[in-house]
Image (cartoon, rainbow, N blue to C red; front, side, top):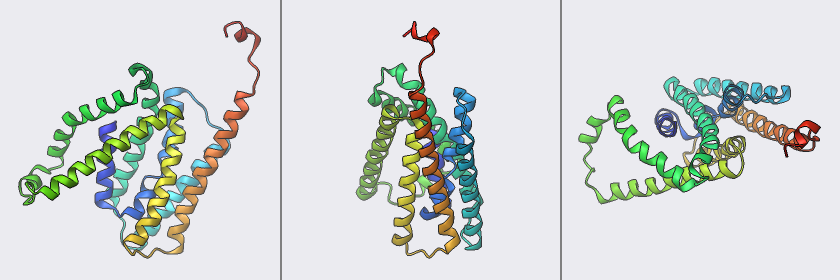
Length: 239
C-alpha cells in the first residue's frame, strides 16, 4: 500500500496541476470512514457522514470546474481517487502494524522503503517508463542525481513523519492534517504558477476544507464524550 500510495500520488501529479491535486485527493476522509467500518468495525455518526457527503460534493464541484476551465484530466483524477484510497488504507494498517514492530517508526519506515525497492521496478516496466530512462540524456548528470538524492531524503522524511504522526495520534488526525497541508499547497501553487481560477473552483476547495474541519471537530467531540462514559460494572473487574 505504501508503494501504491507513492506511485498513484506521482501519477496524479503527472496528469493534473498542483492546484487541482488537493481536490483530486480530497476523498481520503471518506475512504477512512468506509474502511474504518469495514476493517475495524467502527461506526460513524450521521453528522460525520453528512460532512463526508459535503466532501464528495466539493470533489464533484472541483472536477466540474476543472472541466469547464479546460484543464481536467480523467486519468489524473482517477489516480487521485486511488491515491486517496491507498492513503486511507495505509493510515489504518500503519496503526495496526506498529505494535508488531514494537512501535518502532524507524523500523517500519525501513521496511516500507525496502519493499518499495523491489516493488517499483515492475511498476516502472508496466507503465512503459524503461524506454524513457534509456533515452534520458542527463542520466549521468550530477545535477540530476543531486535532485534524486534530495527527493529521496524528502520522501523518506515524509514517510517517517507520516508513520510517527499516526503512531502518536490516529489515522483520522493524519488525514485531516494532510487535507490542511494540501489546501495550503493549493494556494501556494496557484500563486507560484500564476494560475487564475474562478469563484466556484475556489468554492469547491473551501467546501472540502470546511467539511473536513467539521468532521474532525465532530469526531473530537465524540471521542471526548466516549472517554467520559462510565465503565460498566462487569468490565470494571477486568481493569
